[in-house]
Image 1 (tube, rainbow, N blue to C red):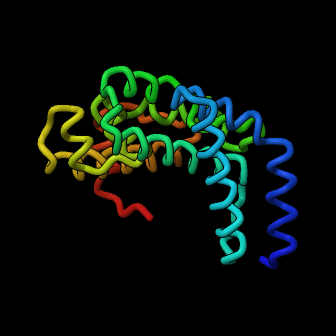
Image 2: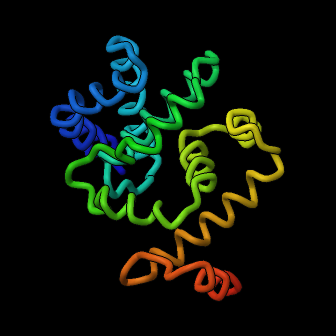
Length: 183
């Protein structure tokens, strides 16, 4: 994308989206000053991505995701990640605060409902940019179980997303569809 067009897109988004995403980041990190820094970093990352030609379909959701990653990376490095409190927040917070996001919150929650509790924990912690080792430590499980849990969870999510109802009918349906190649 040309520099001028990328700059214009980021400026327009910044004018409308910045206060909302700062509140979101502040709720995650507990500091408005640090939240502002993180949000500014996310807008700069968006600008860089657009300049490199990346297609960003939903800039609001994209910046919210970058903010979430930056917050959790910072908190993880600082050792400030209280697994019980943070995991509970991850399980109940919206995936992206964008009001006009085409993939509605109800759809995300409905899809996550097909996962077991452990699969949901692993998926949400991985989405928060934690490494397998960090996830295993927080959940008190072996590092080697993280990959298979993620694979099984992603398979279930893909199958459920293809269903008109968005639900698996039960364990048999999952097992029956699990052998199919998913792309």
